Image 1 (cartoon, rainbow, N blue to C red):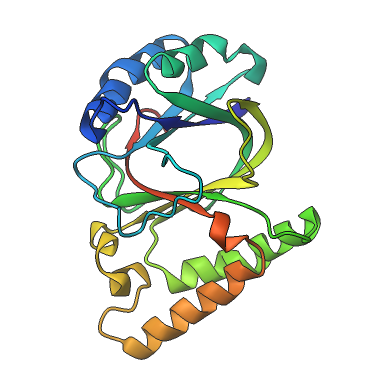
Image 2: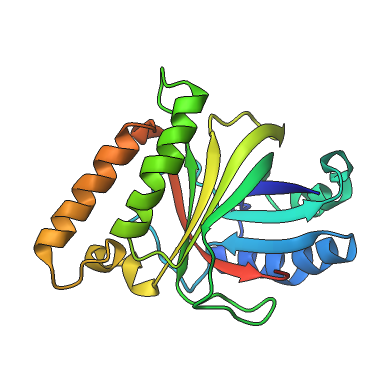
Length: 232
């Protein structure tokens, strides 16, 4: 099986919640009926306000990410059409998934909102860094750094194999990180250092140093979303 990640931009006339409702109540059932497996929707809605954490180097900002598995990526047409009919724009990617942190703390019934927030990030490999060294830093250095310096309870890496549809994007991967909802407005929660300024400063410094070695930071694309998992 193959995993597809589709990033979506909402129509201008739709509010965040209206677009979320369209994806959750129209697109998701239609895609499930068409055979999408392990369907997940991460979308901006009224439960999150991530403007303070948003990073958007190439406007307009993305509004959602839908991921699913199919037997063959070349047969995705009807599934992608469901999303294209409801979005202003989209970009689809064939990815390899790995999960350094599996969510075992906040598992809910299919289609319900996962507690907390999910940061969906498109990352760009640092200029001049070859792919093998990028992967080494990501796996051997950034993985323990992310786990040890942040309050994440889920961490999904979607390394892009190739882009399947949409205007070209420079991303090497799309990363999903789930945090407690308090992390949206409290950096001390985000960096797992509540009440400890020394730890807070150390965690920020370590994170900045590590990601700067592997990413083009000014091209990092961050959106804060709610997560809805329809099949695990």
